[in-house]
Image (cartoon, rainbow, N blue to C red; front, side):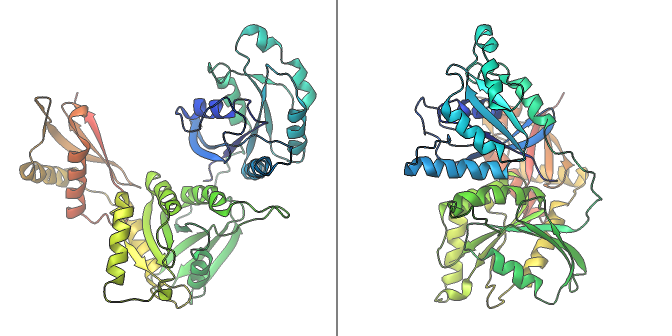
Length: 437
């Protein structure tokens, strides 16, 4: 199911970043009393009343025509296009300004729900001083204080009420996978090559991710049904082109939400870039199955060590993805494309793997005999038993005497023991300590 997207927009220096940080409960955006500090859109996940959503913090919209102001305006307009709900933030201490009216004119053109928030209403007198903002034409203003946190609960209530209704969908038993990565790594070519490889397309339907097509097809060789989520479409706004590396982030986040398995695509010609690591990190943090696909492998001049050297570099740069299989492909030449659905199906099965508690506790006995539990500040960690509590990804609870005694290094040791014993290739696994009552 698609996660709703909420965009915070407004002129510079109205407190968007402070409100963003309040909602996500961490200092992710830079907060500084200088207009234009937030130049790019920043994304994070948040929740309220059990509803999860993605929050976008944007640069302030200015109409000055200066190059940086134009870029900030373009970023904000694209965030508006991507959003399901828009929160228009103003500054209650300044009253309605010409810049607020300029932002309102942009928002009049959208058919999205717009919620008006009047920030910096820090005391009851200021909260009574919001009536001028009715003139902006977006209904009741919501007085809030990003600095103090007052009024944000009521604002979030309004945001959640404006979310699109959750339609009950028929259970989709297909294996859903996507290709994510920077622009020009060959995602579209991989999609087209796989679909053209003597497979039967069942249906094409417009996905909930804008500009993405979810294609269902049946793989005759594997006798399995797949849904391939294509996130390659990049839209232009008239003559204005988004910086495509930044624009790809929200595409990737939406695709990851819908996928069981994510294929992180690298460009063999260009090597590994910082953006590759960022995008892959989203898939890892979401607990999805991950496959690293090195595309355009045919373009490299190779010797006997080229593949091994590239693989070693991947393992160095993506240490948190040590569990992810690596596949070297060429969409143009058709190299190893048939292995992608096979690997996707295997990783999907590993994400669903369940291990009996009795087998887990036999493993735990062996593990603690190999490496006894550590002493922390003179107190020894005791692990009483382990049980699996979830799949997708496989999640295990270990019951201990004190949760803070389970150091990350011993947790990593237990994960390695699980991987050495069972096939969890391609899927992250989680270990959660719980104190035995």
